[in-house]
Image 1 (cartoon, helix red, strand yellow):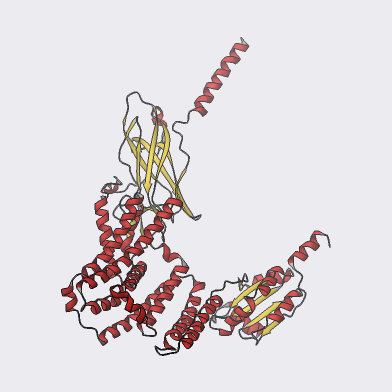
Image 2: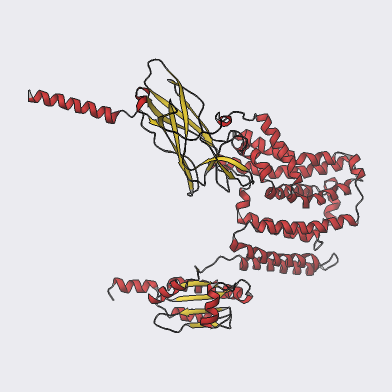
Length: 598
């Protein structure tokens, strides 16, 4: 009998184990990452059976960073269908409309007050009906939407999370509660735009680009071309207008092509304005604005050689029209975020071909007004004749271009703004040399010499101004300097100021040298950049009261010596500094001595 009792007990234990551990019904699903932005922010969701207000259903628990948010209302999302939409389906259960929590109010990048879900929150999807005799069943919860940060929106997503539900244990399901959103948003995805409506919206967005302030500087050039063509044939006027439109469409074709490549090969999308987050692109646009302003001021002109013009026939000026059209589209981008975001993001959420077509429709909307304008000879005839007014308007808009350039500079990293301004001045000088130091009658040899020198100065300035820092500088910190000296570590302090021209020269001729920067790293020197640009800065008081010097000055503390080596009142001290650094033991040598027990 004892053996029989033991066998029964073993069976009961196994049965209990299977019930306790083998059945995963009603267990929460594992958290599934819905979307993420680089390595900074992410949002995930898990599904589990739950009860709310006396109703059974499934709870979708979202977990994520407060910085990452979902739009709660379709009319405020970047495009309809990109608001957060949660639904569930199962062959055994009938689910009702999702119940969403009350939203939070934020101010988005467009300055709008919008309703969003952020951080940790839950959505409840109630079960409205249960199949006859059903207890356990598989459920699929579908979540779609688009997450955004305060600066950028991530690619839209649609994710399905599987879960198992045992309706026979409904009384033991977790009770949840939260403050619900008003009924007008409970249905989530209702009211989506049709494809045709979205394409019309894309076309309208393109038309509105023509009133963007960033495009205004190009408009006088377009009008001047139209005025010049007013006395010519209708056919030629129309063809020149079409060439301008082709330039606009070329820009949008480039955007569509980039989007195709990114979606096809990198599984990502091209966000409108992404190019403006690239410092190189912004720098190029700033310098382009400066050069264009010089053109407006008459510093230089662009002319077609007579030999070329004579052979070009009716095609004269087509390339320029295409280029101006392309430029007009490029210039619209810094100002067009609010107008184009909805249409552009919607296009990227569609099938590849439809999305590409929608992006081109935006360009078509921008181009059509110019095509209509140049096809109306009656209107051209009523335009005022060319005269001094056009030159004054042209010069006045040169200042508008400079304002746009300054606005673009604000988008650059702090460390790069001054460098761009410096180079813009050098570039302006070189452009002045190119266009003002020679004339139509200047000998060809002199023209070549002057312009080669101008290009050489420009290239050399770029190489000097945009060199990357070779020394890993640490901001001034008196406590850190004292600690390094106590540890026997050499310390180099470069006292500088933003307004000090000689300090810039010291940085270029001393610290940008590979041998100097290499020695600083090899000898494990603590390199301190002491900024004294303002009176209130800590380094300013130390420079005046302790060292009693004026910038530029370099202080080098050597191990075992109380008094530092000073390099003041001179700029070209690289050789002396190199000798002082070479006298130090390298970090590698010190480590080797420690390892050998010396």
